[in-house]
Every structure is written in C-alpha cells, then in structure tokens.
Length: 83
Image (cartoon, rainbow, N blue to C red; front, side, top):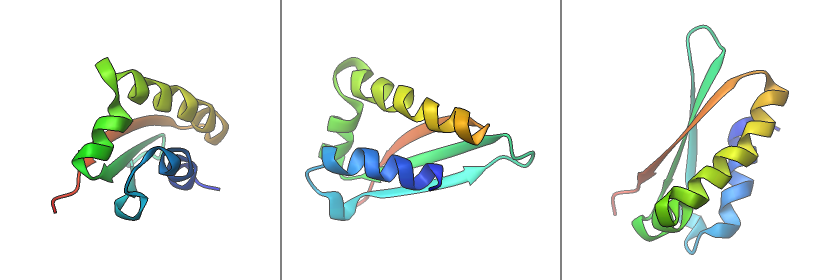
C-alpha cells in the first residue's frame, strides 16, 4: 500500500464529505521526498487542520511511521477544492 493510499484511509473517516476528498502525490527528482496533498471541501480542511494545527500535526506524526518504512521524507499539504 502506497503512502497516498495510507493517507487517504487515515483521513477519510474524519471528513463530512468523503466523496469530495482527493489525495495526490508528487515525488522529488532524486526520489527521496514525497509531497502528499490533501484536497477537500473548506469545512473538511478545517476539521483536518484543527485548532492551532493540532489535527494536522497528528496526521503528520502518524504518517511519519509510513514514511520511515518507505524510506522517504514526507511533506503533507492541505488545499481546498473549488466548488
């Protein structure tokens, strides 16, 4: 299971509109870093970031385990879907 799928399965239950949820990934040229982007409705992004970024930090912490197993550096970005 790839990092993208792990993140998707992690955040899907946290969203009020999981049908709008998108997770994308981009890998660096040297292959050592992966940037994952979560796109969701603005209300869901608010839930995923949380107060003072607490939920976002928790998501990043949980995903750090998967990134260690994949031997890659990981960045997670949050973006809203234009509706």
